[in-house]
Length: 247
Image 1 (cartoon, rainbow, N blue to C red):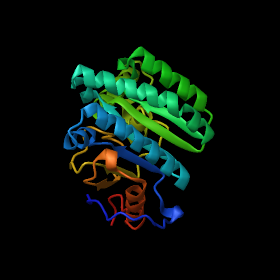
Image 2 (image 1 turned 120 degrees about the horizontal axis):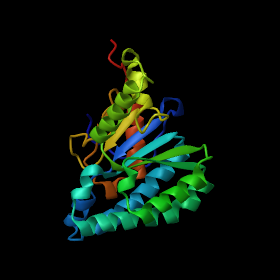
Image 3 (image 1 turned 135 degrees about the horizontal axis):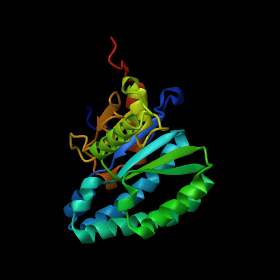
Image 4 (image 1 turned 120 degrees about the vertical axis):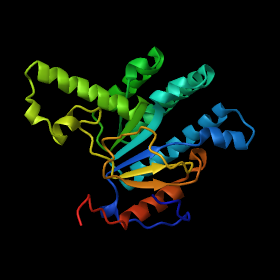
C-alpha cells in the first residue's frame, strides 16, 4: 500500500492507462467532525459533498465504474440516531443528484442487503435506478448495507441450492461461476481501491473482487479528499506494473 502523494492542481493523465473500475472506502467523516468539535452527522454531511465532487471528476475523466462503500453491514450497529441521519442523507442525495446523473449519463447501481434499508430509501433507490438504467456513460455503484463476508455466504447458499437441485455439477464450480453469483456479477473487478483516513485495512469490502486490485491508502479524511488528490492517485496508478501473480 502507498500513502498519499503530494497533491497537485495540474495533473496530466494517460487516458489509456486509467483504471476502468475505481472503488473507494470513504472513511474519516466522524474524525473530521471531531477535530472541529462538530457532531458526527456534520461530518457525514460534509462527506456527501465530497461524494458529489468525486463522482463528477470520475465521469469527466472517463472512469467507467466507480464503487463507493457508503454503508456497511457493521454500520447498523452504530447509534440509532446516527444511522437514521445517514439514511436521511442518502435519501436526500438520491433526490438531489438524480437529475445530474441523468444529465451526465451516469447509471446508478446498488449492491448489498437492500431489504434492510428503510422503505423510503429503497423507494428513492428504485426511482433513481429506473431513471438511469439505460445510461451508458459511467456506472456509479453504491455499496449499501454491504459486507464482503455476507456476500460470499449468500453466494455459497445460492450455489449449494443449485447443486442440490441438480442445476450445477459440483465439478463445474470455478472462479467464473462464483463471480456469476456475486452482487457484482456483471461488473468488472476493481483495478484500484482507495481508502481514505489512513486506516490500513479492507474492512470487509469486496473481499473476492479485490484479489489483484491495486491498493492506495491516503491519510486524508474523506471530507477533505479532493479532486486534485484523486487525480494524483490515478497518476500513480498509471505507472504501476500489474503482474497478477505472474513474474
